Image (cartoon, rainbow, N blue to C red; front, side, top):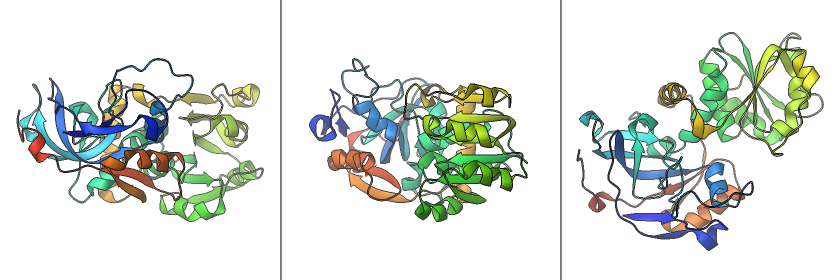
Length: 338
C-alpha cells in the first residue's frame, strides 16, 4: 500500500516520506479500513514536531494521523462480519499505535470505529474523531447539560464547533466566544445561541445573559489565557473543562474558583474512559447524521503533498479542516475478508 511516514521528528518537509509499505492485517477485535480521507489535527502535527521536550519516539516508524473515513474491507477475530463493506469513520488510529490513517489502509480496534451514515460525506467523516470525541467528553464529563448554560471558548475552532453542536443537542443554552469579530457568524452557524468576543467585558456580558448566575460549564481552549475570566463568569458549582493551554504550567486563581466550589477538569484525548468513547462515537455520529455538526474544509491534499498539508495546519490561511485524499487502494489488500 501507499503510505506516508516519519522516522525522526522535525519539520514536515524534512522528515515526512511517502512510499510503499506492507498492507496491515487486522488482529483480534480490529478492523481494516480502506481509507478515503485522513483528517489532520493539531495534535498530529505536534507529535511530528519536537513538542514539550519530547524524548525518543515510541515507535521507529510512524504513519501519522488518528482520524479518517473509508470502508471496512477486513475484520479480525471476534468482529462481526456485518462490519465488512460498511462506510465508517474512525479515531485513535495512531494513539499508542505506530500506524495511523495517512495510508491507503489502516487497522483500528472496532471500539474506535463509528458507522458513517449514508448522508454524511466521507470528507466530513474524516473530521469527526479527535474534535468530536474531545468535545463530547468536555460537554458531558460532569453530567447532563439540559437546562444549563454552556460557554464554549474558541467556538469557531474544531473542538469548539463540535462542543457547541453537542451542547445544544443536549438541551443547553450555548454561548460561544471568539477573539475576532469576523468569526461571530461562524459561531452562530455552528450552533451557539449567543456569540461574543473575548475581552475585558466578557464576564459582564455573560452574567447579563444569564441573569447574574453565570455559565454552568465552560469548555476552555486556552486555560492559561482565560482562566481568570472563566472564574469571574462561572456559576456556583460550575466546571471549567479544558483540553488545551498555551503555558504548560498555568497559574490558577485558586480562591475565586474555590469560593464557587468549582471543578477544574483537564482532558487528555488519548486516555478517555472506554464508556466515554463509546458514548461519544454514538452522539457524534448522530449529530453528523442530523446535519448539526458540519465542518468547513480548508483544503484537501493528495498523499504525496502531506508535507504541504501539515504546513497548512501549522500556518492556516483560511478557516476549516485540512484533509488528505488517499489513492484508491483496492488492489493493495484482500477485500472483504475476515
